[in-house]
Length: 228
Image 1: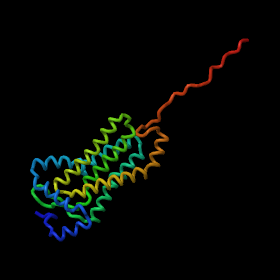
Image 2: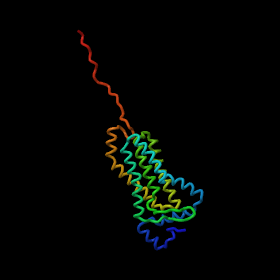
Image 3: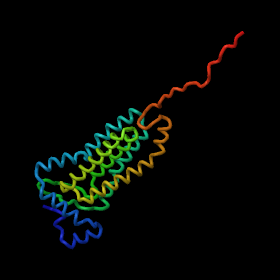
Image 4: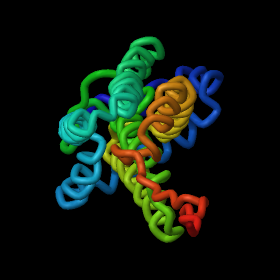
């Protein structure tokens, strides 16, 4: 089995200069790898699918069609910039950092590419985080808002956990992906704010395509006919 865990101790010690959590990274990766089983791997891969490129592409396609049908162009542009844009930046970061995966060969793993940061995790952070930002303004009930936030966080956490347990990524790969995903979403939120403001001013409220109609009663009393 080829693993970064098999590096000489002096090489691992040198990595600690750049990554202070290198010990935790390797211990956690090794602990999960020793406990993998076919059934556990099947469950973990099901969790990981919520951050896979295929699933994200399918959800993106459906949401883009919906936004185009409603002609919510600012939201459509925000979605495209936030999710695919952030995932492309993550791929560039992988090449720049050039970190090897915890395990690249074995009975349950067969990974290619680099490890930092986790592509599945940042994809899940961007997709579910951006969808959460879209729907929160439309939710007035507190319990629905809390449920939406909890669901988004749970999906990201499940994807990140599955990537660590499968040996595809270190803990710091997953934490970095979540951090970079949140930073990118915040940047996109502020960068596209002028577009959304113009849409809201002309169409009413977010996620509502037609302005609300308000009935205005005249304050004037009807004119009375003077007696002749």
